[in-house]
Image 1 (cartoon, protein in one colour):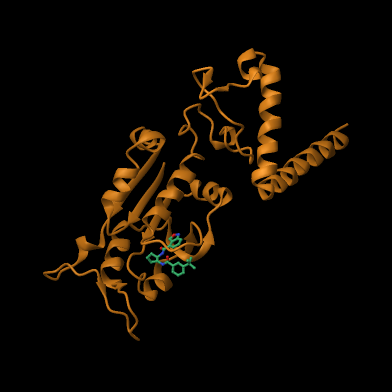
Image 2: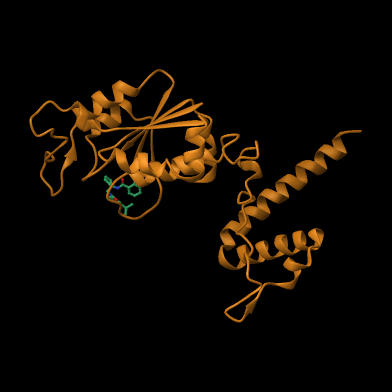
Length: 244
Ligand SMILES: CC(C)(C)c1cccc(C(=O)NCC2(NC(=O)c3cccc4nocc34)CCCC2)c1
């Protein structure tokens, strides 16, 4: 079972977020374990100080190395992969999430203020990871995005015993429009094809519209989809011609 330890000044942010929905179910069924640890537990001074002013000046504070060291060493063991959520990291994508889902033990370090002491990164961090190019107030949302994305690749989390390969969102295309009751709302009808009940025709409609939506709204995703599908087709053809 994949074990995740998150080092953060706001453990409730993590605990709250992983106790709902698909993630909550995965944790409850022991498919995944997520625990949060605050460096404040490892401070010894009266004010439980976890940050200090940066050498060389500059506004903002830096998270102190000592409390972080103690927290990491409390949770770390030889198979741990230590990830620092940081704008300097490579940007998360589905391939990285899938890779991470295969790990035994992940330790996510979440920065606050202006970041953490560089010596912690030098000594403990295996890799830095970013969830995108915008200013955030901390790494916690990054940790949660990764946990949510990787959980779907854990067999059983999505309920039907398979992993995310069968995830209805993981063919790399955007979704076709979705409708539920009533049949008519705000003067708009549900497309007839979806009400018809002919599953072959409905399937073709969904595939076509989802490709068109992707082509229109995210041509970059569409190009990637065509590339992947072409590779699949070519390797299938090769296998056919290779096998007698
Ligand atoms: C990207 C760019 C806009 C150029 C930029 C340049 C310099 C600093 C920051 C910035 O946001 N610094 C603040 C902190 N940010 C993040 O931790 C963080 C930010 C973004 C994606 C992330 N994915 O995981 C963690 C992430 C770092 C320490 C406390 C929060 C952002």
